[in-house]
Amino acid sequence: MDYKADTTNISIDLKTDPSTRAMQYINGNLYWWNSNRGTISVFNISSKNQTSTIKLHEDGPNGIGSPLGFFVINSDSIYIPTMAYEINLVNSKGQRVAKYDYNNLSKLGVVIPSMTRYSNMAQADNSGKIYFKMRDLNIISPSDLNEKALLEYPPILSFDINNQTFRYLDFKVPPSFLKFENSIDFGIAASQNSILLLHNQSSTLLEVNFNGVDYEQHQLQSTLIKNFSNIYYKSPRMSSSIDNNMRLLYKSAQNLGMAYDTKNKMIYRFGWPGEEIPDGIDPMEYSANLPYFILSIYDDEDYSLLQEFTLPRNTYLAHHYFVDEKGLNLFPMHPDNPEFNEDEMVIHTFDFSSLKK
Figure 1: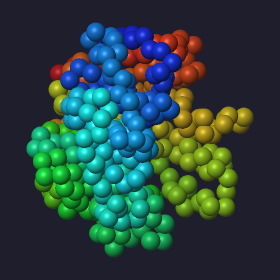
Figure 2: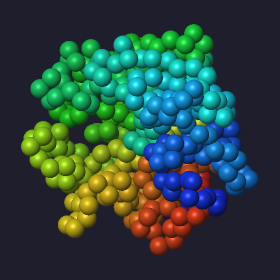
Figure 3: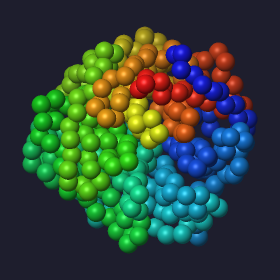
């Protein structure tokens, strides 16, 4: 790509994982979850230094159990979803300030994550509400996925920071999604006025107003992400091996997530076009470090496709991205990249603002 504007190199040590399932940029700092170490590293992008490490305690007076990512409101307000159907609030020292239980709201026993992987990160508006994606519809069997299920299992659970209460948004997934005869799950992002939901198994984008009622449905264009299929969804997965299931899954296209650029009013879509996993390759390792992905860029005014690229193989980590004031940031830290150095975090910043001029 010819739009690379900057490269940032930050020294890291063995206490920082070279890849992550959750990251967030806020107020000049990049928060990076080290799930293997139970910590969050905080990096200042402008000074190119690690400024702190937040320890997430599993037990003891500040124990939160097993975390499922995080979401930062500010340096002293970090929300941690856990396997215990709780959202824990910790401060910059990892001290637990409060915990909020949503167990009675999880209709099918689904836990809430907040991770960059597949754009499962929580989102927030400017009125003190956090929005979490519920994945109930994704675990329902094909025979039970119908209009009744769409009404019974809303996809967005909100948390009001001010009155400390949970509430499902009134929005329900429209029946038009049943035509795909495929799993119903979404990547989530947020613009200034809306929650954005990108169907993992099609090019359908839902723009849901923060009021939780009004929404619009859009079809995103792409010449590179189009090989969607329901073969995996309808296959007898319970009678097949994990390896065979993974090989079948990655034959078809899927959306890996998306991000919103507030400054440039753009949507970045990350997609997998679908291909055969080569013989002799471990499907689980292949899934963890996809060799490449597609980047598609859309104008948020009319959702028109501005440009799309096939990223070079074995260069950038899939599921690793953030947007800051300078543009879209990707990590050329794929383990098969000849230039990969486990002692260094490398960030490539891309400025696509000229696409709208």
